[in-house]
Image (cartoon, rainbow, N blue to C red; front, side, top):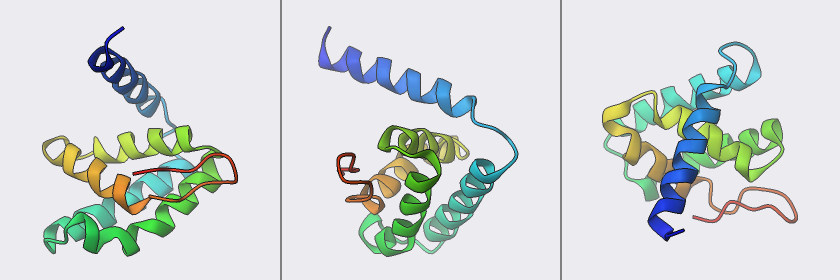
Length: 110
């Protein structure tokens, strides 16, 4: 399988898992909070580097809630997809903001 096909397959898996996240409860609440903060940062024209300190705590909370970096990826894709026109920018901001978050053997690397 080519690298591009692997990325497409992984993206499709994440999108499917993101769509299956609950609409109520702690995960949904966290997604809503991240969405609001991303929207605020984008309106303020904050770049990924400037947004990093504001987003790091959300990464820690996502890891604690989901228990893995893969779970964080699902939250990232769910949150980014709430604004489809800016989804790529939003994923990039979260990716950079969550760099280094995780546990002993499972760490988000931007």
